[in-house]
Each structure stands twice: as C-alpha cells, then as structure tokens.
Length: 181
Image 1 (tube, one colour):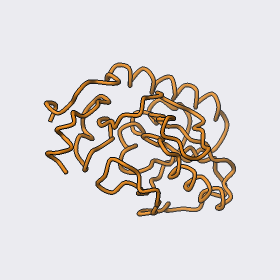
Image 2 (cartoon, one colour):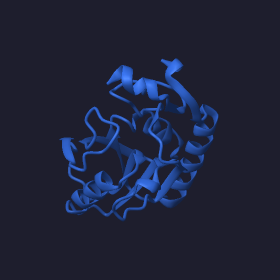
Image 3 (tube, helix red, strand yellow):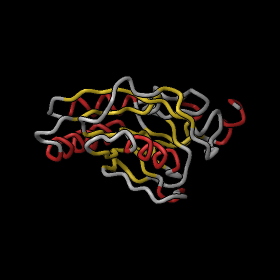
Image 4 (cartoon, helix red, strand yellow):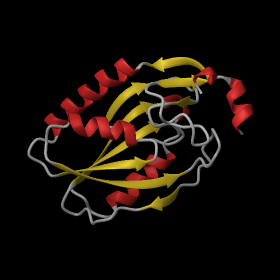
C-alpha cells in the first residue's frame, strides 16, 4: 500500500499536535455549553476519535453520512444524505467534524440542512482545508491544515475506499489511480 504514496504531506506527529491544539481551542470556546459533535462518515472517524479525547467538556456525538464523490477523485457536486442523525438537535450546539473541505458544496448543503433543524448553533472543524478548490462561500470555524490542490489519502481519507488506515496524510502516485480504478 505505501509503495503508492508519492510523499507524506502531514506526518503522524504533526497531526497529533494539531488535533490537541484544536481540542484545547474548542474546549475554551464551548465552555459551559451542551455540545453535539457530529462526525461525517467515513473519512472523519479517525480525526473525530482523536479530537473528542482532546475536548475536555461533556459532549455527545453522532454521525451523518453524505456523498458527493462515489469512487472518483472529483466531487460530482450532487450531495446525498446516506445516514441521518438519530436525534433532534434543537437544544444543542452542533460541531461538525469534517475530514476535508474542498469545493465547499457538501459542507454548505450540510450546514443549511442542520440550521433548518433549529440547533443553538452550527460550527465546523475540518482537518484539511483545500481552499484552492472552493466553488462556494464556506469557511470552517476551526481548521487543522490548509493544503494544496492535491488528492490526499490517509488518516480517514480514501481513494476507492482504500488508504484510510494510514497514520499520516499522503499524496498518491499517479500509477495508484490507474491500478485501483
């Protein structure tokens, strides 16, 4: 699997340090508030698992699954909810945990959908922000790393459902696309 990694973009150590910093910042910002941490499946799971251990507040969590990629490296622009929340959100502050924000279309759709359910607030923490690909106005409230316009894998991010288990963020070699597609 690692033979198809062109280079490591963000190391395991840098991920751990930044997740701890984000957890401390979120802890300060949400002090005294009821928080629902909302993980976006599947890519955000490793990030969310590490992040909630760094948030030093009582919290609950749930998951949603959305899709705009399928088995491609490019977003289709059409967002579908594959799994919804298991409870109402009228009485909580929602913190969406995303693995990556690129075009912003999925995140914009999700925020509008959740705001229509009347939570106390909706904020976003993303591990990766690929602002060069943004096609809509959306800004994460908390950002782990800004990255260049490259297709990345690892730490939950995949290509064709593979590479999620890498402990770092890496860039695939071109030949990996040809073999796995």
